[in-house]
Structures are given as structure tokens and as C-alpha cells.
Image (cartoon, rainbow, N blue to C red; front, side):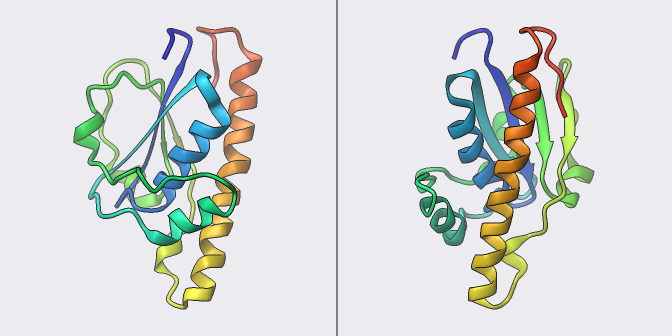
Length: 150
């Protein structure tokens, strides 16, 4: 990545669904202007429904894997976005001038019925796309170095 790239970490508890979808969506929408990462406070495994609903829109996240926040602490992030309430409370302090945002999305994996669960995953995916489009629009309005975050 070049010096003008924005480094963004998206976090949730297990780094299995919401933050994984966010990583893929931001990589897609941000192109070469964003470095997208995800991690969890208690990482689990990539959820197959996350992979499935992302494939529905042509994005393949099947090679992504759940990571611990400790694995990415060395990266100088510009923005850290928590997408679940538990991760927002457990989010560590990152060095440097890091903008912290919290976007509360319900856990789609918590839905018990598989058909309803797929709907929940799609709803979270679509919500993340909408939030990242708004976020990236705000970033592009400001000159490099004077970026603001929503």
C-alpha cells in the first residue's frame, strides 16, 4: 500500500462473521486506497454463512481466517471500528492517533433458524456496505492527512 492508504481494523468478538464480512467489503469498496483488516477479542472460526452471503454479491472471503487482536497490534491503524457491543467494551488501546468508531450490528450467528439466519447475515452484509460507502465518501472529501471519520 502507498502512504496515502487508510488502514482500518474492524473488530468483533469472534472475528467469524460481522468483522470478516466488513474486511471483505472494505477491501472491495476501498480498492487500493484502503488497507482492510479484521480481528476478534476471542477469535473463533470463519462462519460458513458469512462466506455464503458474500459470495452472493461476488465477494470471496473464504481465504480469510479469524485472528486475535494481538496478531494485528503492530499495525499502525488510522481507524478501528467495532461492530459488536462486546468488542467495543473490550477494545484495547492502539498506539498513535487512532480514530475509534462503534457500529452496533446484531450477531447474525445468534439466530437459531437457518433460513432466518441467512436473512440476518444478508441484513448485516447490506448494512455494512451502506455504512462503509458513507464512511469512504467522508474520507474522500478531505485531503490526505486531514481525513475525518464518521
